[in-house]
Amino acid sequence: MSGAVHAGHAPPTGPSEPTPTRRRSRWLLAATVAWAVLLAALTWVSVRTDGPTVREQRTLAQAGPVADWAVGELVAAAGGRVVTLAPDRVASGCRVTPLLDGATLERAVEVMTGADEPRAVLEHVADRLPAAWRAGVLVSDEGPRLRADAGEFVAVAGRPAGDGRVRLTVRTGCRPVGDGYRPPAGQGGPEADALAAALRALGNPAAPASQAVAAPCPGGGSARTTRVTLDPVPADPARALAAVAAGAVLLDVPEVYAYRQGAATVALTGGELTATTGCAG
Image (tube, rainbow, N blue to C red; front, top):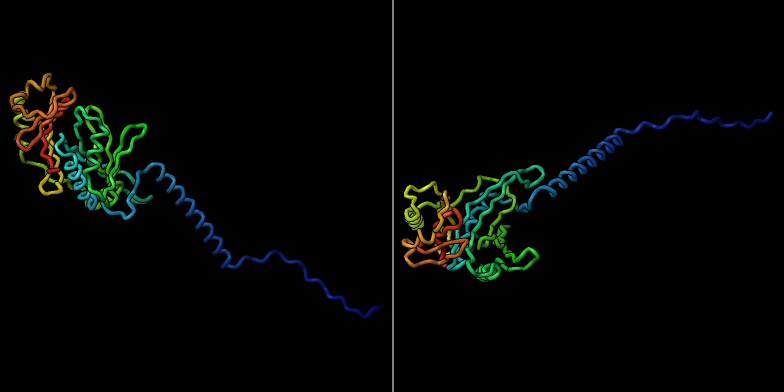
């Protein structure tokens, strides 16, 4: 009988239980992955559906004055051409971030081209804008396009708008609303008297409801447009307005009839009658 002693084998055991630290790590990893997937999905939806946003998140209340000054610069750059200021448009519902709603502001100036080519009008405006805006006109398959940067992430664009006009737009991009946009006061001035005189000449002594729009001029003062919609549209505006135009006709083409009365310019385009005081260019 041998005297050797054989060591026994320990009975097999199951896998060791994970430590609490390992369990926490797994939960943290799973939560991180889930959050990353959620952010990626929200970002994809935002990129697909929302407009450009402003990196510094300046509010609409802060961007509004920049847009207003840009409109004044555009009016001045148009020089002696017939212009009108369009009503501002504030659109809500865009997303500044996936979790923060915002709004955009758009302001516009319309320049009557008359017999001039739209590209020539856009180049005329671009050449007279501030050098810091880096304004230029490019020609694409869609026609001439003006592009400029008014600063503070406010973009300026211009394009032909048909009916003998080019439209110059100022856009803020999507912004936090803050205190909201407050447009400059636009009531009163020579344009109101000129509009009233035109309405009387057209046989509308009781003026329809009017809308006033304004913007500060670079050299001081303000540009203002007061507009009304006529119904019915005058059949022969040139004949009806000849007496009040008094030989100071600026445009007499199928798309627009315009004349100067004192410091104001009166224009009839279709059924829209406007009177505007501009900025010194």
